Length: 244
Image (cartoon, rainbow, N blue to C red):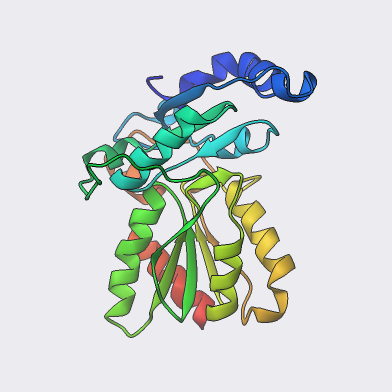
């Protein structure tokens, strides 16, 4: 689809039909369908075309939600999504379409539900996906010059969520920052924060810190848009705050 903002018109078919056929039929009816398109902010497409709906779809049992952050992940995860027997919500970020990276020429697949460590570090764990993973890696480069080594964990699949690499990383670094482009209330980051604080409470030296977009609609102004979308500088500030 052109953008996931338009998918709202098909929520009944996606949520009440595609997501439930397999469950309601006792596994007799499968729904191998991939709904692919851009999600989140692009450039000056304003409030009605800049929304991140991953938490909406991740809320629904029966749906798989995928959000790649690199060209290699996009290809490998899409190949797995096409072969999956469940309806897959495949959310891409329009800004990342310009991102270049190495992609194997041979046939390969990245299993759905498998997270990835995009950068190893020892001081703080940053959990981020899609465009925010890229922003977090830029922030990690800035912090490395100051002697702070960040470990960047990319879930890649929001549902099912691969919790093990997140927990393992937090137990190593004792600090956690979650970065997402979506609004703060009822978000994927809020769920991950809950899971980390439940499973890694004794390992945390500080509360989990979250970086989100402001709790307002996206502005049209390019200047305000830059302030709205979490930038590397904001992530750097969050890391320093959680380490203070």
